Image (cartoon, rainbow, N blue to C red; front, side, top):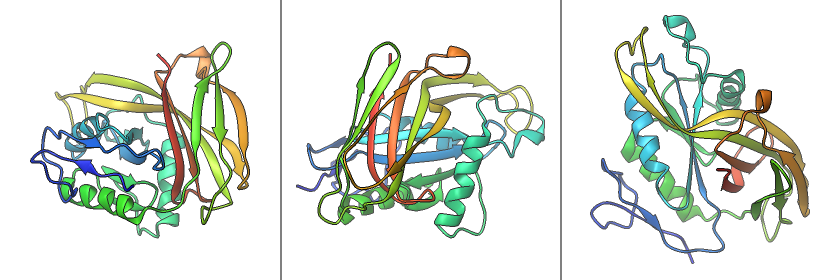
Length: 249
């Protein structure tokens, strides 16, 4: 059964997502979560509306929403303390895989397939609905706690027309941070960021067969993060065909 996302006025098509989105997904054991990645920066004056919208999307059942802070606006007088080279490199990889002429913020990539301006609610809603309608083949991904601060990742074998080659990535994130920006383009603003990615790890190749790996969730200097996401993507940061999320605390 195809999963549908229900929005504010009761419409069943994500043509647009209103402020204060009230959404839920119909139950579907066969459909993986829909993944939304926002590339943003504390130094980007156009980003706060997108940051707010991502926070709303993170409350939608069946959606994995991640905030990835890039480094290339840090020269504007304020250094984003969540920015990482890994986030910047991931956005650059999407530029090539999605054949974009440039990178920008705020940018949202829907399920590894559709890039658009991160504050364009109507376009994002359209792309989310397109992913649902396409109903592309996928693989099952499951996350479970192991001993200590370890995480067991289990990925199922490719069925039917699901891709048989890809890459597996682990994202460790913090649930929420609120920051007062004291300089740069957003000076004087207080902004809340949701599901802030603090670390990205490549766990290896997916070869179409059952796969299981146990990984540590301890971050740099033993930092404890709030949640983990595992994505299975076509090679070179392509379309996502498997995803799972687990709260760590």
